[in-house]
Image (cartoon, rainbow, N blue to C red; front, side):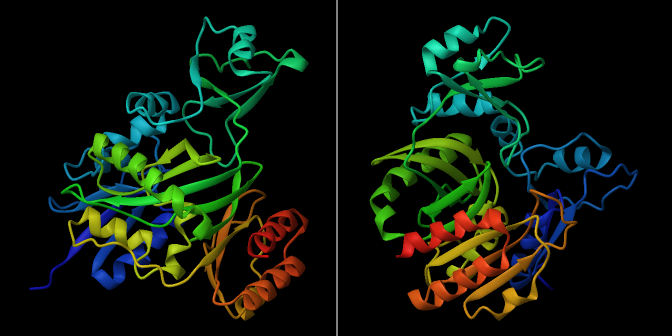
Length: 360
């Protein structure tokens, strides 16, 4: 009799699509569910099916309730806790894990005290929602800024961090508590959106034990199962956690080309209680997000590129695909990046120059 497994995914975006792809070699049927469209449909869930999510929050609907109330909804208590920036930051404080100084913005919060405590620029973040630079507001003392209407009790205030660079760690935890990690990834954001990632980098290896200890403690405290991503600021030789994502993550997309087992297969193995092992890096990679741009088949002519196109409606600021460039030798990478400089629009030029500088 065939050994069949089925994993349902709350959400049917690009992460769900990549989980489908990763499940095929394992004979795991992955079924992303569009929970944003109202419907009276009842899903044919079986008792042994596994439920996961590709997002931290979702609207209440018959489909989302059916999925989220299933007894095999893995990490069911984690999503809401990490989706709220207040409870996420509180968790980091409880575990004595470094993060930017912060506080809840409530009815008694005074802007003058925020400037006094955190400096002349204070970052407000909505507690729920907001990603890719959305849901944020900078209070500036020189402009006598006030907390926006409707933000009290729905936002946190955070000290601005003068960081050297942004890095992330993607790790996995099994049902038995085993943890394995990919190398730290160097990231570049622009207007709050991840534009490119590079991994691995030997100069970040000294930070790897620190990052692994932090993410291990977080996953253990939550009794988490599966892949989790931890975004950090680097200050010299110290890491500050910026945000946590209880799912596969954009900054881990390089693992699809660069490792023997990408983050999507590792996530499915953990959910289905299949054997895990340390992922082996085959070669260094550069991942470039494709944001609000039309598909260009010239990308396929690059000697070291893999294209992942999401087949989504193209809108400004929307992630519609990504390119992964394998770094077999510097000349090939340089040629590919210079070709992209000619083919991609002006807002990509700082990121592409950043990639060339990192490898110069």
